[in-house]
Length: 103
Ligand code: FES
Image (cartoon, rainbow, N blue to C red):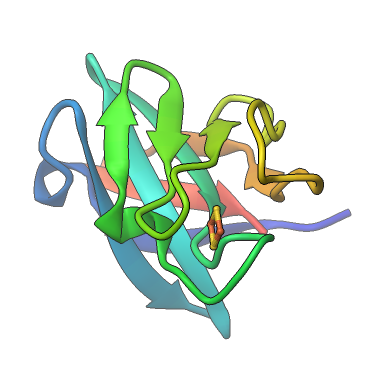
């Protein structure tokens, strides 16, 4: 079983925004949707683009390169040209105000 790893302070991720972080050898996109925190791999499954540079619309992240959309809750690829889902990670926010990622 994987354990939760400490990421960044929740206040570093503005509401309805996404930021990219490197932790434990993982490049992750961390999202805040109305105070709820989600995490996925940051590099698109279709090409070399970072989802943290994309456009977050509700629970959908649109890749900046070819505008493919993933659902950040499940990592599911929702639109073409995506054919492969992206890995998503369970998250929690600790009493210390930090986001923890189950990676
Ligand atoms: Fe993301 Fe093509 S690289 S949709």
